[in-house]
Amino acid sequence: MTITDSRIPRIESIELSASRVPLPDGPWGDQIHHVTDIEVTLVDVRGDNGLVGTGFSHTSGMGGATIAALVGEMIPNVVGRPLSPQGIWHSSYRYVHDIGGAGVTTHALSAIDIACWDLLGKSLGVPLVDLIGRVRDRVPLYGSGINLNRSVEEVVEQARRWQALGYAAGKVKVGKPDLEEDVERLTKIREAIGAFPLAVDANQGWSYPEALRAFKRFEHLDLLWIEEPLPSDDITGHVRLRERTSTPIGLGENVYNLPQFTEYIERGAVDFVQADLGRVGGITGYLDIATVARAHNLPMTPHFVLELSASLLAAVPNISYAEVTDGGRWQELGIVSEAGTEVDGFYVPSDRPGNGLVFDREYLARHAITL
Image (tube, rainbow, N blue to C red):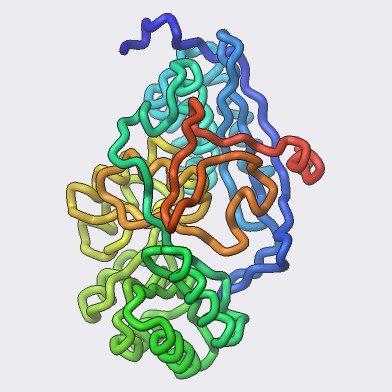
C-alpha cells in the first residue's frame, strides 16, 4: 500500500472539543495528587471520503483547554494533507517543537495522531491492530487500585478479586507518612494473596533517601516492580536507585517523548516501560518507544486508557500486561460507550475498523469545557 491508494483520503477538516469528566466514585488520591475529574481533549479528523477518525488526549483534572488550544494552532499545518499518520506526526512535531518537545506538545500531538490512525483504519476497513500488524489476539491484564486511603482489609479484598478475575498481577498504592505502615500493609497483603505477582506505585512521592529506604524495607515482599519512586524528570536519581537496589522499577506515565524514554532505558533506570499513548504523541510515538524498549528486551506496560492501550498491545511484540484501573475504565467513566471486551483476565480488541472506540458524545457534551 502506498499513499496513492485510492482509499486513502486527504484531510478535509479537524474539529475539537474538551470535557471535564467527573469521577463517579469520588476523588482519587496518592502521595502528591488529589483528582476529582479526568479532562479529555477529543479531536475529529474528517477525510474527503466522508469518514471521520477520532483521537484524544487526557489529563488528571486540568489542562484540557490548554491542550485543545495547541491542537487548534496545529490544524492549519494538517488540513489538506494526504492521510499519512507518520508523515503528519513528524511534520506536526517539527511544527510545535520550538515551544517544547514534550508535555503539552506531545499531549496535543497524541490527539491528532490517534485520530489519523483511526481514520486510516476506517478508510481501509480494518481494525487498528491489523493495520499495524497483529502479534496476538488477546492481551493479559493486571489490576490497579487507587487505594492508599483504603483499609488493608479492603485492599486485600480488592487483590483477591483481581486473582479471581484471572488477572496476571495486581498493583497497590504506597506512600503512607510512616514507611512502617506501608510495610505492615504490604506484608498483610502478601500473606493473603500468596505468590500472586504484586507491584506498588509511589507516584513520585519520595526523595532519594526515602526511596532507597523503602526499597530496602520492601525486599522481603518480592515485588514485581516499584513504580515512580522519584519525580519523573530525575533520571540520575533513578539510575542511582536502580544500581543500589534489586527490585525492578516501573515508570513512564509522566515521561513524554522518545529521547526521554531512550535515556531512561539506555542508562538502565527502568524495567517496565509504562508509556501512556495519550501523552507520548499517540500511536506513532508509542510504537517508537516500544521499538527502543524491544531493542533492550524490556516490556511495554502501558498506563491507563485500557480500551485503547490494551488493543495496541495486541500489535506490540514486547509486552507484559495492560493496566485495568478500578473505577478508571473509560466505559465506567462514561467517556466511551463501546470498545473491546475483557475475557477471563485478558483483553480482546474490538473488530471494528479503526481504533474500535465509540465515544459517548452526549455525555461528553454535558461536561464540555468552554474553549
